[in-house]
Amino acid sequence: MLGLFFMKQLGSMGTVPEWLNLRNVLTVVFLLAMFFVGRAIAYATTPTAGVVAQTENWGLGFGEKGTQPTGNESAETLKKYDAHYVGDSEEKVIYLTFDAGFENGNTEPILDALKKHNAKGTFFVVGHYLETAPELIKRMVEEGHTVGNHTYHHPDMSKISDKAAFTKEMQDVESLYKEITGEEMVPYYRPPQGKYSTSNMQMAKELGYHTFFWSLAYVDWYQDKQPSHEEAFDKLLNRIHPGAIVLLHSTSQTNGEIMDELLTKWEEMGYRFGTLEELME
Image (tube, one colour):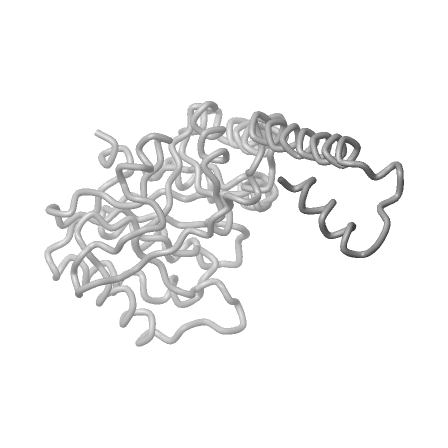
């Protein structure tokens, strides 16, 4: 049909060149079609095809106060990849997690507050943190906290389609953690910047990791634009919900200053503090 269309169009323009007969046009159309079909099949059957196109930024949609938010993916979908973002909607428990990219003096007051409230957290650390703050890593372990993997260089891991490169980012953290503590790292992973893909989560699963997103966070990571105490409480108290996996940054001065009061207020609201280990039981 396409060949006939071309022939009609060319015929309306005048004499058709001898070489441009129907058979030749159809042959060209067929070869072009086979080329594009071949490209499509090759793309679809390549193991890492579509990784970048499927990249997502983890995000949340909030409903009524005190209710769990919806995520980019449902909890049921995430379970296929040993991934999580929220706990039981009926239990007033909070899972405290902290992303630790570097140390600037705010981790200690956070640890002090956690110790005071007998609350255990998970600290997702990068290579730089391990290199520069090994004593704080030891303190976390000694006080019963979990240290998780936030990758060595904090790249956009969803753009890494090569499994060997993905694995190296993870294993370099594991190796340095073991060198510092003498222990194997618990296989908990948080994607840097919350950027992920299904291929990305599958690679983490194949390495034995559980991937953890979050159901509550706020903008606390800008060093020169820290939220006020009032702004922090407004977000963290009004959006708390049963089964919340809370993401806070240990670099935040505000978090260091409010942590004791924040934990007290959550306790007064009837919440207790659980661990990610409990979440997966």
